[in-house]
Amino acid sequence: MTGFKVLSAGLPSVCVFDVNGSLLDVDSMAPFFQSIFGDGIKMARIWYDDLVFYASVIASSGSYPGTFIELGQAALQMEASVYDVELRPADIDELKTQMLSIRMFPDVPDGLHMLKDAGFRLATLTNSPPGAQGSEFQLSHAGIADLFEQHFNTASVRTYKVAPSAYHMVAEQMGVPMSACCMITAHHWDALGAQFVGYSSALMHRPGQAALPMLGLPQPLAFARDLPGVATQLIQIRRGQQNGPHECGARFDSRVVSGA
Image (cartoon, rainbow, N blue to C red; front, side, top):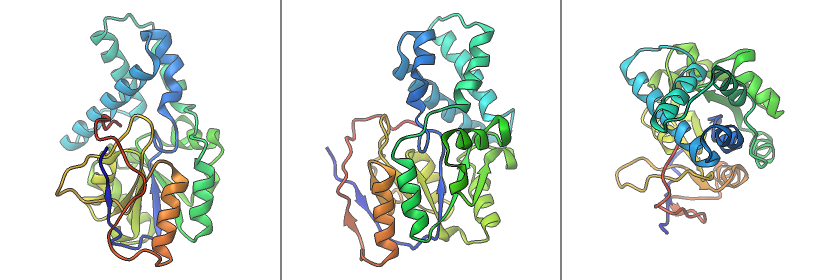
């Protein structure tokens, strides 16, 4: 087990939330993957890790071949080829339904209300496409869409995370400098992508996720196992109750694979 140093080096006013894997639990898709591959949680995580890996690679090239859901369907076909599993057309269609109805982590409403009541502005930034065929449906289905001031998706700038333009878009449309934004996510790659362009970040240690304990990387403002834990730390920072670096009470197992 390794302690994780958390630096309180900024005072964000806008909390920008990742959606898939952070607010919504990708593991809830396990029954779908179980029906195809026979190992639900493992394959759901492998599929999603590959999905965001290829999304990042494609984003770095400046190209945009299709929506995140379409890329997810392609990743499913890739996994079927790797594991020598025959997919039906109905399986590919069903993946879209599954992605649009991912179950919410139960701690999310309490954490969102804590931050909102403390005066933070709330927004989302997701790779999911917009509208009834994407992120707004996901968040409405989860019952939390109305808690956010605005919803942003990378499709609006024809890219995926971690393209800098996605993070810039949010700050510009919220009318704040980059330093006023804090990316709240379970994915350290997302936190780093935001921090490299001027955001701060806060990390949730969701199942199957972990921080990357490498010296020289920018550190998060907060690190906790769930959203209320992150919210508590950010509220304390906002109220001036924390001065300088401190060691977060939550700890992570550095052997856990940092997923997506």
